[in-house]
Image 1 (spheres, rainbow, N blue to C red):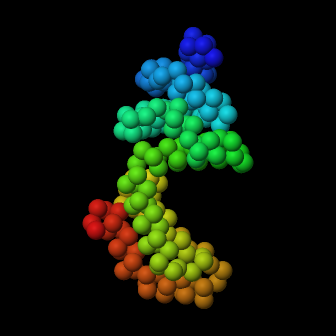
Image 2: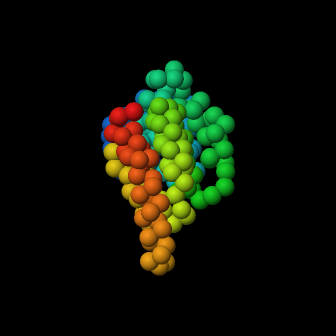
Amino acid sequence: MTINATDAAIRALAAEKRLPQVHLERWLAMDADSSSALISIAHTLKLRTGQLATAIELLDEIAVREKTSAARVLGGPRARAIVDGGGSAPERARAMLEHLRLIRFPELVRTRAALDADIKALNLPGGAQVVLPSELASDEVTVTLRFRNAGEFERMLARLNDAKLGISAILDKLGGKE
């Protein structure tokens, strides 16, 4: 695709998606290979407006921090596996954004993995689940319980009570206390 054809395709997709002007400008400012790679992925994964805007922001930040291009990031083995892999387009789009977040926020990834390990170490029964906030954006966790009778309910409450120190430690980590 020529530069003019690529710009026209970007502008057409941006208009179709009603992409905010600031994101369109960031996309148009990318090098030719990067803007072409992104338009290809946007079509293949059927990125929604918010997903496209997020991808543009993350790719721009990654390119600056890692001293690379969006094309190199999108052409990497993990990104290619997501684009070419199985599953629905929405699933692959979500996976792509998660992949970009992992690159952009490596400390967040390490923290999330440590918290997931702490949750697993609680050894809660199958009907109990501790859910961390999305992108660790708050210090609030959700605990869900699924049970069929009063006996299961009592056993789960007892297990949660046994795990309260571990859950408190998880809350402290989320709140910035180590």
